[in-house]
Image (cartoon, rainbow, N blue to C red; front, side, top):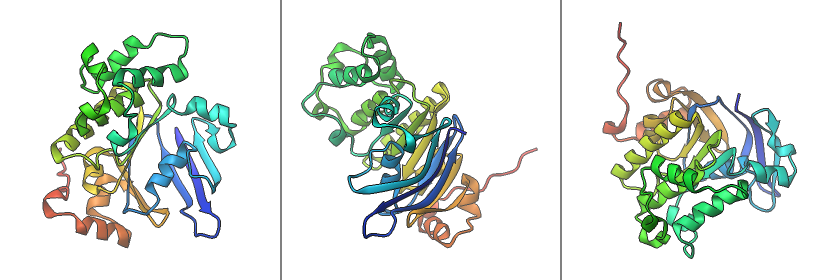
Length: 262
């Protein structure tokens, strides 16, 4: 098992944001986590990297590749972030540094974990993997000179730079138009297969999760209330909240049942 969690996140005087949330992901697996705003999705994404807000208390276990991340000292956790576990956040133009050129930001991301090695070839490969230009002219651009879709691809290139074992995409398609979203979903699928990386795709968009993920967890009020193969989520949901999510989808976005073949 690559990721195996039982996690509670609390703030003093408030109900738990996450309540003994259990999540297990195998190496190379693509898993979706869907839920409404306020259900705890982004809290989970940041907590897995121990980037939670000040004042939050994390208890339980974040098992990653045989190590409990909650027991690691800060220095060991910094060595894992970006190298073994990488995050693709939402709002790409806000996540990139507006004062630095794209090339400088990629080189900084490389040298955090590889200070003594030249990362030019790996950066070129990461850009190519994300279907971005690899030219010097592109690397000299500033974030405001990119479209939202290209900026999101830069963040993805940055995330896969060190070939992480786990990629966390937190609402990574929420700011994109439908065509660009479809392209990004295909890119995530291709990168996961090419590098053998597991992907946790966190979203409020159940239809997008159904397009990408083999299994989907439904997050509601800080707990996963249902976790099943995508086809079961869409066609045989067992929890009332899951049934409401599926029913709320436009008819054209509901997945057709799988036809058995011989």
